[in-house]
Length: 239
Image (tube, rainbow, N blue to C red; front, side, top):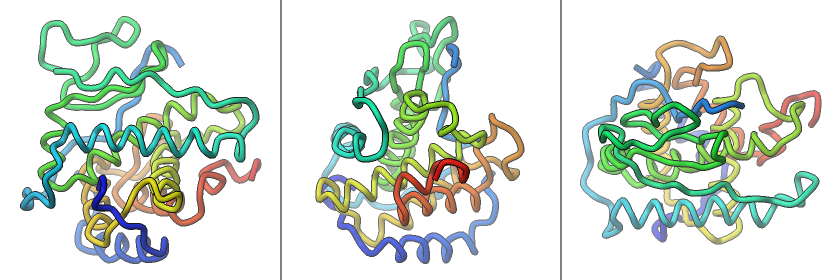
């Protein structure tokens, strides 16, 4: 994504994701980390789409996501916006892996830690996904930021399907940033987003609060936020 993203009509995203989905099928509080997905099984890497490193794209994704929420919070919710801390990259296989409460951060994953109010990601996960395309990095960061946003909302605004709501908030933030002109989204990035959502999906549809949902549910949730914005991500009773 980064400077290579150019915003297109949101309905084009929905159509592109739906077309890809027909060929991919299903995918594979406290101190508990919230992670972006289930078993990771990316498609074969494609050639790099630009000169940005994974670190460059991580920095750009953080700026775009945080910038969107900072710019629009008061239009959507009461009170002021407070950014989560960015713990950033860690090595989940290292003996000194950071903790969320009393629990070590998971290997090859990314999290929002409620206990410390921070977002973090295993650099190996980011590098692996970045080989698919830079959209992976933006999706993971925007999803974890979505969990940070949930922690700032009144309880009635948080969906029981919390992981799918985080996908929706990620779509709203990324495409909202594109509308603001702080992020550009190109046609090829929609395919990368669908691939990433499918790779990070659970094998079965959403059934309880810990599920991320299958590929079709994750793509639909992300698309809803991208198409209709943050309010479309809130429970029906409060819209």
